[in-house]
Image (cartoon, rainbow, N blue to C red; front, side, top):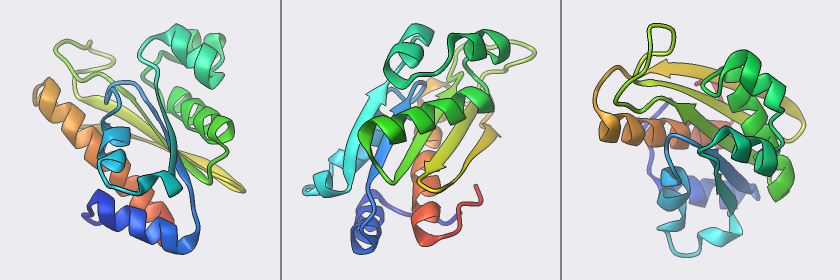
Length: 163
């Protein structure tokens, strides 16, 4: 992953004729905000959905309730289902998702700072990752998760989605 900014990402996606959507939980719309802060982003960024509750993940993105019950909302499986749901519902080429525990809190099995990400791409397998940002504080975890999600999108548009 290489550092990037939202404007550079949008320019590259625009050049390649790609569209993007986002499904966010722990980042609460920060990915969408970073992209829509750039004038003219609507030709690339089609939609963002904040699904903070499990019920919203199911109702708005089609994440199976059974999957959430089995794996928990903070899992690569749920992140993948979120990204796939966003991509299909927005008719976009790419979608990124975030679901995690920004803090405070967490548990022994799912500690504060754990964020699961997924990248869904038309015609390709959905990829998912877990990143442990540590108990850096709610704001720092959310910002780091936003930046990581944007980097995943940038890498995918560049042709190297390797998280």
